[in-house]
Image (cartoon, rainbow, N blue to C red; front, side, top):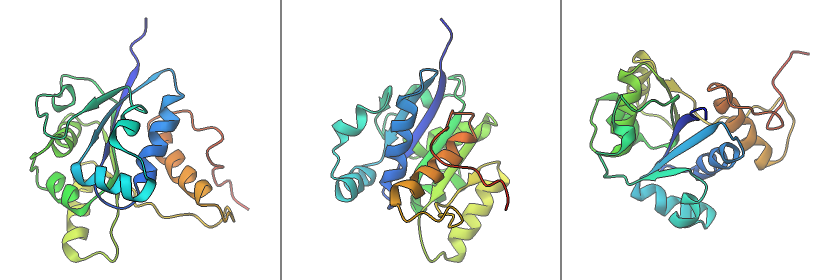
Amino acid sequence: MTQKKRLIIAMTGATGAVYGVRMLQVLQMQDEWETHLVISDAGVVNLKHEMDIKRAELFKLADVTHGIDDIAASISSGGFKTEGMIIAPCSMKTLAAVAHGFGDNLISRAADVVLKERRRLVMMPRETPLNLVHIRNMASVTEMGGIMFPPMPAFYSKTDSLTAMVNETVGRILDMFGVNVEGLYTPWEGL
C-alpha cells in the first residue's frame, strides 16, 4: 500500500475558522491525503462562536488530531514526513511565534519543523489593519520560505456567494500542495 501524503492543518483563534474547516472537508474526500489537525484553545472558542462547531465535530474531519500542548507529537519532528503545513486562520500571536522561532506550542513547533526541513508552509494571517510588527513578522516568515496568503477574495469571478469566495481561497491554497481542487474554483485565464 502506498503511503498517503500528509498535510498538517492548524487553526488558531483568528477569525476565519471556515477556512480550516473547509480545507479539512475537501481533504477528507481525497483518498491519497492524510490530515493532521492541531487547533489552539482560542481556535476552539472561535470555531464555536463563528460556526457553532465543537472540537469533537471538527476532529471527525481529520485523520489524525494532536493536542496543542503535545510537543512530543509526530508532527513536531522533521523525521515525520509531511508535504507541509497550512495555518488557517493564523492569529498575529502565532505569526509572531513562527517568525521568531518561539515553539511554545505544537502549532508554532510544527511550523518551525516545516520551515527547517524546507517544506511548504502557508499561513493565512487574519488581522486588519496591520501594524508594522505584523508586516515585519510576515516579511520574516516569507524570508524563511513561508508563504503569506491573507484570505482576500477575488472579485473577477463576480460571485456574491460567501461559500464560493471561501472555496476559491481554499482551492488556491490546496492547489499549491498538488491537491485535486477541481470544482472548487475556476482559475483566471485572462479576458
